[in-house]
Length: 429
Image 1: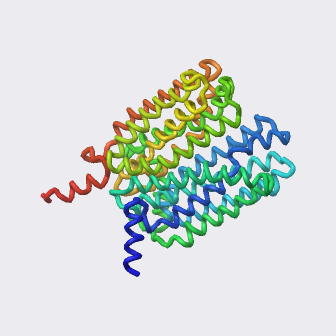
Image 2: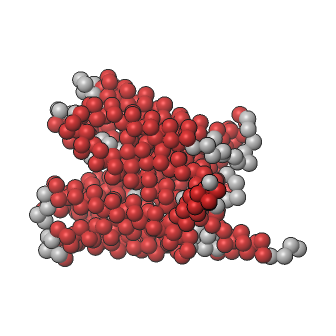
Image 3: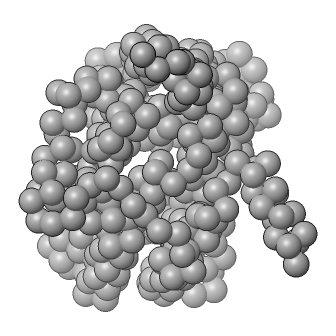
């Protein structure tokens, strides 16, 4: 019996997945699958039913606003109230929003109800998923924190962009559109069961319990950037990380169509990009722990994405419209996009306490990228065209590499555990 237990432990240790949080990781995967099942088809479905493009855009804008707000609150609430309570709050808000959106808004396309309830639904996944990310930063060994957060982004992206899309493509044909949306509640509840019930890990911080400490913790979500400006730099880099991810779908499909790619081919390219991305989310967790968190973000994330953003854009011309040539360039961009994974280890390690507040800034950056990407397209594509927008996106990636150069751990340690070991080896006095 003990031999089997040791074998299981060694498997988790070698993989860098915290065994004490394994059920939570599975819960994130399933929850995000339920949350992400409508992402690829909801907008065209609503437009086909008679809703205007402007109404659809406003709907997703409202949804994005609540995602950004919730992303910030997830860190400070997880620190002040504990991740389990914050995650449960996310489940409740998600179910209430889905019930109102699907049950009362969708059948008759009641736009005011749809706007309010879909926005309410947006509070759900950041509170659930990003609160668990705070849990990871506290309960994972520092020497393997980069790998632990790599696993998080592996299951997060896998559920949201891969499994959700695959399940939805089956469910729409067999259940219909509305029932597919209803089924999201089932998957969210299954994910919550794994993460909140089967996951028995205990979360403890140095934060004092009580209303005063909780109010202070909420304020920390803003004051942390004054106390440690490097956290703000980390938040800016996090915005840049996924800016192109939200900008590309706005204009790249029409650009690709002009070079002979139909919608199906574009979707195959886009889907394959993020299938590769989830694998490299995990890989770059290991790379970060070995090569250094900051080094990985700078060279693979910043400079790598800057170069491959341009390569992906020009690939239809370089390869004369060859599908596989364009696919390979897109996959390379998606792979290097994962080079930012160690940011989730680097930023909370800048502070000895208030890690939840530091993660709140990082999570806010993730939410703000939902706006920044489409906003850049909307502002500049009329005057600069597709090419100008892509050069702006590439320039932002290069700028993020430069900013990351200044996000240093004490003694310029490559990872937090190296610094800790050096301190332990230094004689006192």
